[in-house]
Image (cartoon, helix red, strand yellow):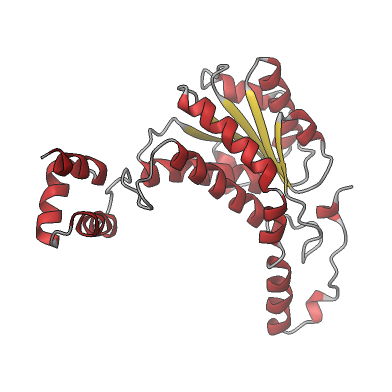
Length: 268
């Protein structure tokens, strides 16, 4: 049953004042974290599989179409600056190619063969893991990609927002976050998209913590790519080492990352 496409519990939306529209949207949004919570056992299995693959030198690939594809690209793009990992470690692929990030590409999601071709362009191999993202759970691009990946011996997972979907059936480690009807019927960029974002946040954050990319509760491997992040890095060193900002700035400048600065300091 595709509950993401079911009729909204709200109607005559065009007649509602702004305050009621906002209250209705917010009311439904509050159900999303609970839906994610119910899927945590499934998500735990996917995280463990991802940690095993990345820990053994593999990579994480996301495949999706439309909003789902864009969310995978967003999550992948945030891993290097947050955790200091190489850009190719987590890769987001979208049906229709990078053009589709900004502008919908007609019928791109209906090609069941294209995802595997896209993955092959990255020299995909059995050490990698492929996670399909599809709110409906029936996107041919994602189903085909997962089936091919699994047939070639890769680990596979998915994030879907309907129960019992074809995408989940194609994945070894499915995560089913059943979000139900949207405020605007079928507009899965809303609750379903929020659920997918939460799941991807959890997946990569927990994976990177398990892989040693966080120390205590701090992003010690983050890229110091702007003044705000340099300041944050200095404050981490100040907290950890009990030093003033001037000394922290000197250490960070010398060693290039919080982790390297801590290691050098503790080595003395």
